[in-house]
Length: 324
Ligand code: AHR
Image 1 (cartoon, rainbow, N blue to C red):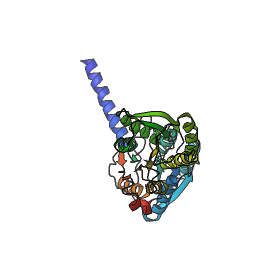
Image 2: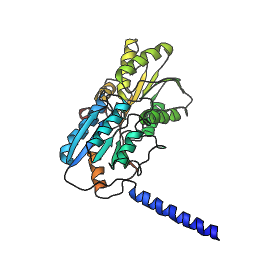
Image 3: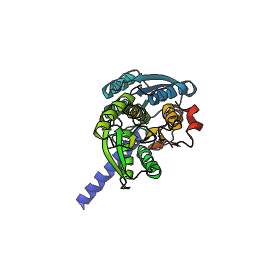
Image 4: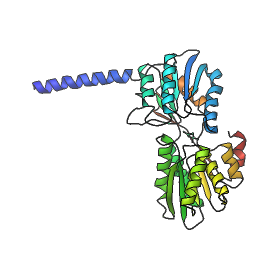
């Protein structure tokens, strides 16, 4: 009886502390005319990143942001240091696209400890180490697993050979889009036994590295007839490597990818690429809207999901003027 009584007290205390923790779990954001906003970009070595930064810069005036934008030049350590510096400068809000899933956890935790509401944009962090609604407000972005799956489904429907020999060019190792785009594509494509992935290697989401890796893989796998790149920049690099090797992308090799950049849409129009599933970089307006909802006291859904289109020979020309 006594023991039961004690346990009830302990349970009540736990519930009480839990409620308190939940109530205190996210830093508040007051409603005001102007906000000091940090946007800690990871790198600026491709059109996607440049378009994302520009989207925040273009949104700043209309959303009342005094924007501090940094560029970590491809270094997760510098991205963490950039966030440290923003915290020291007294930002009200942080928008963070974490380059990799684990190394950016300290940045998320430090912003949380400093009472700064953080929105992860476009990429996420390891969900076992930091969670939306607790460590940061929400993740704003695409379903990367679904993007990979949609590419695989397009390949299954459109590849007209007997045997598909696939080379996969992965994004930055340890990043959420590389992990998820691989999972979505690989799980779906193996359901059709016409296809085999003979090599899968990182090209770090970069055009030059994509070209170099493709050059090497072509020597080991000269019979490749499908290239799946985790982003358009690597797909364009792969097309360059294929052409240098005397191959004809679009004729004897199907090249497929993700993003929707201008160069990719042009490659589709030119018949060198089959498909690109959209991954939008235009997070400025969405960031503004979600931040204002949060400041107004609304509960923000843990994942504010962005819906992606698909670009093929049927519609690429209709969208190239709006591409970046
Ligand atoms: O996180 C999104 C990915 O990152 C884009 O596909 C890529 O182009 C960028 O670098």
